[in-house]
Length: 149
Image (cartoon, rainbow, N blue to C red; front, side, top):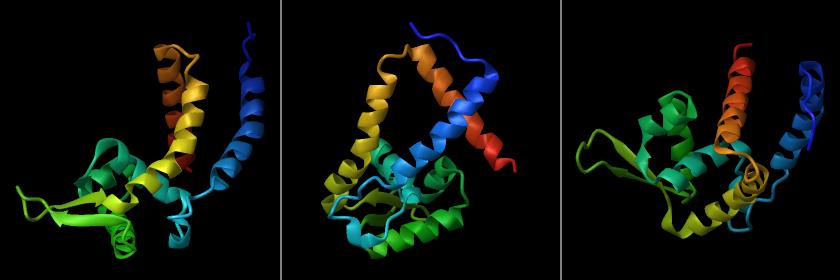
């Protein structure tokens, strides 16, 4: 059984660990089918929402990504021109645009997401549901605090 960490020790451990984690994520190989598209880690979150939650309106994506709709629209436009995303009018409200991953790119996007998903699965599996919630909430609080600067 592991022993707890004091606050100072935990901060030290995370300051040493997080740069390695971020560096490793940035070096995650992009599947060959996507390699020529100049994708970056910022695209991963957009693809993850569409992969896990399915097609959605631009404003919903912007809200989930916590960026301005114009920013998401530019990303979607860029990725649509490359054939990675598909935009279509919402049949119930023609003012809205629904975005989805292009059908012929779904497997490649899933492959890109799966490496991180599998690592998280292994890391989180031994934890209880409550411990997982604390971990996720803590990472969220850390991100919010960084964004306050």
